[in-house]
Image (cartoon, rainbow over all chains, first blue to last red; front, side, top):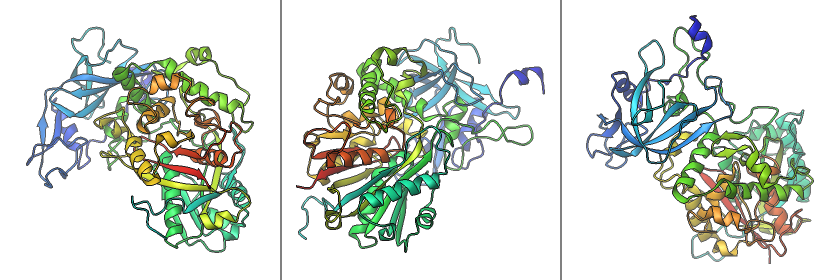
Length: 148
Length: 406
């Protein structure tokens, strides 16, 4: 184990091989933000699933979206609940500009100054040595937020 | 029996005839089975019955005690009906709903509804251990998949219910300008009722607004006293037909109506995907309220006292709006107006609720609702005839209206 790894608790990595959601992480591994959508009627299906209740079809695609959004809500965690997440840190909930049906969560270190509606931009964080990338969000323009 | 025209044939036909609780503590030193048995025996005796009269059991899906466990421990003669409701805190109203359904359909005559937990000394909520450990090889065991959708939330540090409710509270502040002081009034109202209730865990601990505001932040904007207690204990109630309940030693609390709702957009999983609903500030409480009031033939103006599920202060504030006691967005000013205090237009959580009596996952709210109907609460609302009792959110929810027999 390297010295850096000793300092840092183990990361929580996402399941990337689920039959319904794996495509999201496959796209992320390519540096793309993609949402599941119905190939027939175009409905965004997030969280991802194989059946579109809007039109009754089983034909879905992974649609690449811009990676821009707006801050919808956030909380700064001050009481530690999980050893992998030392406090303080901030959970952000981001509404996507080009798919308002979908909201995605992100992690920011510390207690950043945030305000509702501020523009947010996706980036992709390596979380293991297997090539898994986790879509993350930070305020745009990038200022005081470091790369975590 | 003549049918009720608006589709609520269960109206007033069943009642809660017995209530029972254990002591509420931070370390019971006993099994959840023992706690469940003690509360159940107390409820059955309170109903003027013997355990052998019980033929149905309904439970919360998160309870460690299964129906057959309790039936065996109580020495029931024959259990002919059982069911589970949930998830988690959404259960209590649903448990009563199942009991009513079983009784009216002839599948049981006397149904125990219970919740038992060592919520402090045993498995604690919000203590997430999921992921990040226990894996083999070079990659830790991943979180999510298998329909949980946790892979979209937990890797970002969203691991506890309080963090989700903090996101709801922040959003309510963004949309409506709700303030910490307004949430504080909910914590203070519950604490003041607990201070009058010797059985409450916080019976001897007053709380001022200064205490509330100066307490440590847990997950902003929610502070320590926005969070409920962690409790070891159990509650149980006996549900039977209104006719049978009339023969009992205590005044029956008629079940005027009961309802469950998953809302128009239930979402997946146990908790976190509810963040994807169209609105975070209108919850499943809104749709359950519409169904409940229709079935009851009553509205918010008819409610004399309410026991709101209060895992967090914001949970109460959202329900004040969703159940129609004030307009959407006005929950903060309503809470701050004194309306929810003992002398107000809508006294709430008269035993202290989860915030200050104890956390029995919504069952203690039903017990206190029955006390109000009987006139035996430690914060009795004079002349209370109609009590609203709600259960947890956000995934699904349930609620009931209790009424004094006229």
